[in-house]
Length: 399
Image (cartoon, rainbow, N blue to C red; front, top):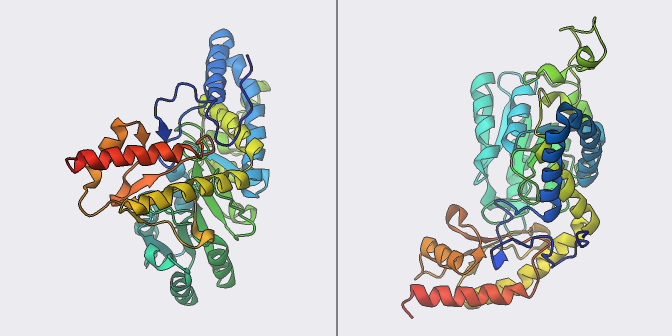
């Protein structure tokens, strides 16, 4: 029996998902039947054919590379595969041809994946770190942009920012940030893991030079894989510090074309895929291929609108119950995340646990209660969520 076609608000492709309301896609997405089937079929193929199962995968990986490029408005040759978002950040931090004294702008409040590698690069290459505040970008974002431009005027090599802030769901003004960076000769690195798959991102429009994004959140794949976008002209000058044996041009010839091809002087690819230095996780690549196919069928703009409709139903009920919403009143700053602060008489951790007992899967990063639905979540599900919240509040208040 064929799986049903994906439909917004329909979780038929997740028949074994236990949660009544799964609102944890900003953490880890559950595997759809398409993803499960793709992984199972590959394992069965390896069991039956061994190494022969690899060759169809190589073609599939190139198709997937094209799909990922389409997702963010890039070109196929600007996409490379890495193990996770952090690996992509680290690769860029190590491979940029820095000069001592170069300035990197970071934001306080960012997820550490987009901070720690830059701190290590600063130690290794004698870089200067300048800090701005994520909170300055709330509201009109004017304060944050003004402070950024003031720093850019002093001379900056690279700005590192997340597309969407993990704890509040604030969608950063990437196009404005990118325009400022371009005007002042700075490069822009984006951690895209809380945006790609649920929030439209176009690397060309936003003048993004680098973007790293893991597959296990809004892309709805599995852990162990990410893609790294590197603008072609930036890739051409990267120092291949992270290169491995498969980073060479024609790196496989000595295995399949007979004697005389084992060489160590083949040039390292001057493309984003220089980061693909060794064997890659075939099962996770196929999982992403399967999940990305669903996203392309539904389209990211349609998914984004569905998520806003979900939050539009849930947020007023939360406010009525004494929660303080951190969702931006500015539509352009919204994402797939709705985060709230609990009423003052309610502790967050017990509330989170009480919701979990009632089948509401959500997170509590950095002191917030974070709801992160995706395309399978039905809009009417918000009624169940609010009922569960009422029950949890009554339990905690001794009602």
